[in-house]
Each structure stands twice: as C-alpha cells, then as structure tokens.
Image (cartoon, rainbow, N blue to C red):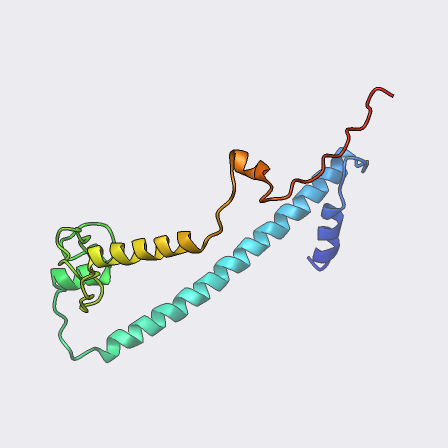
Length: 167
C-alpha cells in the first residue's frame, strides 16, 4: 500500500462529526486491517532474522568449544551470586551487626574511641561553682523593698494626674 501515511492521517482525523456510509467505513476498516497484517508479517520476519543471527553466534561459540571443564557451583557461590546471606535467609546483604548494649561498653570510654577521659572530681567542681555564685551575689546591687523605698534613699517619681475620663 503506497499511501500508508495518507491512510494513517485519515484514520487519525476521524471524529463523530465525519459522515461516512457503511460501505466507506467497511472499506477503511479493511485497509487498516491489511496494513496491520503487513506490519505483523514484517515484524515476524525481522525477528526471524535476529534469532537466526543469534543462533549462528551460539553455534559458532559451541563449535569453538571451551577446553575448561565446568564444575557445579557450590552453595556458597550460589548464595554470593544471588546476594543471599550466608545462613541462607532470603534477605539480601550481609547479616546485620549486633547492637551494642550499654552494659557491654567499658566505663570511661565512649564506645567509639579507645581514649580514656580523665575522671572528674565532682566535689571540687561543686565547691568552685558555689564560690563563684557567692561572689556574684556580693557584687550584685541590692534592691530596696517595702518601706525602705519611702525613706528617701531612692527618690520617688512624681505621680501624674489621671486624665478625667468623664468629660
């Protein structure tokens, strides 16, 4: 069929607005079916050519022959090839690492590094903190409270008269 593109355009442009007689629609349907059948036949021929080329390569590889004898795969090799765990479980990858328990970590280490931290003297730290706190309290100014505020040591601020809200 020389007018394949024209036929495809005609079929693509079909809508419910096109007015065709039953004979015209049947003729169009036959053309599309013939075109599809030809396409399938050419695809099958292409597949046959591809398979024949593949079979030829396989035959030539077998004709050359491999001198190395093949031995069956061991169970460990099969598991490694399929990325299974050594114990044969289905989950891929290595076995999960055991989580560290806090009771298994030696005292004085972080568990990550082998360096020991120097032990801290808590009593000495508390004594230093208390001395610093007492010193800060002495240097802080004392605020006057209650009746002492009215003695005149701190000047009173004048009271502003309230605005008359009843105006």
